[in-house]
Structure formats: structure tokens, C-alpha cells
Length: 252
Image (cartoon, rainbow, N blue to C red; front, side, top):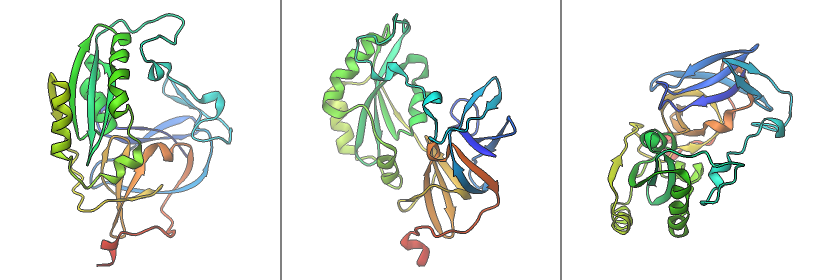
């Protein structure tokens, strides 16, 4: 079997790893209290999923080879369309997202996907700033705001804040500058008392997910796994012990 994708569980029910075996797709649910028991093997290109089937690839580059890598040009747009013809003629929302304790970013999404997009990213708090008629206008506004706070927060930064709360004063000060239409406050029920250890594993007891970050408990230590880092791995059932970094609490 090979890990060929993941579902953060915002639009299609529960989060899951997507596995492929002989062309068929399987979902491994990632619900709190569930058990994962997979050993990671070799990693290669995850191929393509199309019409409910997996088309494998032998390319060595992971998670995707050059032939299966896709670049979404809209993510690089700053108001000047990079496509042959502009096609984002629907309402877009400009938002701020907060990740504990004090990492903030501005972003854009189609207006009807706002709540979904924020949960996909694992935002702790968010603010809806503007609704505009098309993506070009939204990207122009985003580009201006990004000069001050940036437009991305990397997964390692999100992991470092998993056991912390958002800095209320810093977030309030940012909102004072932008007068939001509405605000959001998200809970992920991970029950963490200390920062998880970053690892790439697929075995342990599921504590939960936050965006694309999977939190597992194993041997008295909690681990944070970027699910994208699992994509492309061949896996076999059953966990094999290997040395892992442990939290100090595991020795208490």
C-alpha cells in the first residue's frame, strides 16, 4: 500500500489518510481515540487519483515527480491575472488568520468557502475583512495587507504553537487596524498540555487533527505529523519500533 493523499475532514466528514492498493483507494479514518499501526517504507511519487482510482508512478521524487506536480497560479496572483484568461468572476473574501501564539497571515478564498478554508489551514482565530466581486480585486487587497503581516504561515510554525493560546493583545491590535466584518474562534479539542514532538510516523493513538497536522500519542509522548510528509510512502500494516524523540513528560 501507498499513502497517496489525505483529507482534513472539513468538507467530507472525518479526516483520513488516503491509501492505494492495486489501484483501489482506501480511507484510514483519523478520529480521536483511533489507532494507527503502519510502518513507513520507501517513498516515491504518489501518482494521480482520478475518478476514484489510483494511477501509480515510479518516479523517485516525492511526494510528486515533475510530471505529477501542479502549481496553482492563482496563489501567486497579486491582481494581475497569470492565466490566459481571467476566470475568477465570483465573490471572494479577504481574511486574516491567527495561529497560536502570535503568527498571523492574510489570505483570499471564494466567499462561500471562507469557514472551510480557515479550518483547512488549522486557524485558531480568523477575521473576515472584505467581500469583493472577483478574485482580482481580492488579490490586490491581499497583496497590500501582506506587506505588513505576510500571506503564509508554515506548518512547523503551527506545530510550535499547538499547546498554546493566541496572544489576545496582539490579535486585538491587528483587528483594530482592519475593522473586520465578522470574527471566528476555532477549537480542535486536542487536549495538549505541552508542545508535541515533530515526527514523520503513521503509528500511535490519534489525538486529533488541526488542518493538515495529525497529532498522535505513542509511548507517553505526543507527536505532530504533517500529513503531506506521509504522502508517497509505501506502508505495511503493523508498527515497528524505531528510536523516536520523546518529550520530557514521558519520563515523569
